[in-house]
Image (cartoon, rainbow, N blue to C red):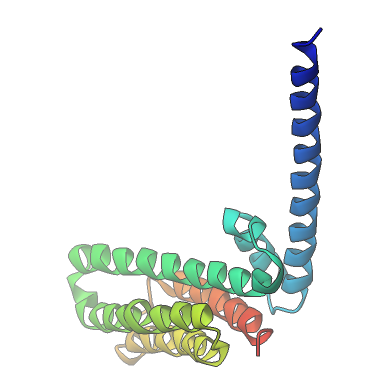
Length: 179
């Protein structure tokens, strides 16, 4: 009988912890939905935030900052994906070398400057600079697309460019909530 008491305590403690974590996940899901309603692309926002576990680990004052960091990281991942695609296309399509080279430079600036500044600014509590970084992502993506138009070519990465523009707009709108 004495051995039964610790087992019952353990089971009830696990049950209480499970209910509390479920409640916390519901609160964070509500935060995600409420935050995403204030962005230009609700479905992209929700799917991006829900796919990252950090969105469920946000606590009190840092909630929106954490969601902003998650979105900036999504921009970073999309940038890396685009840069890899650009390198592949340079090898397989030498006639696109000039515009692809300009795209690589533009997206390298996104990765090395805009994303880095945005993350640092969010962590330091200076969202204004993070907002500027995400606004610049749009300019860099448009610069890439223009390099193809200027050379009378159709961009093979325009869908990816549109994706990163949408991600950066969502990130920017979340960051703006911190201003």
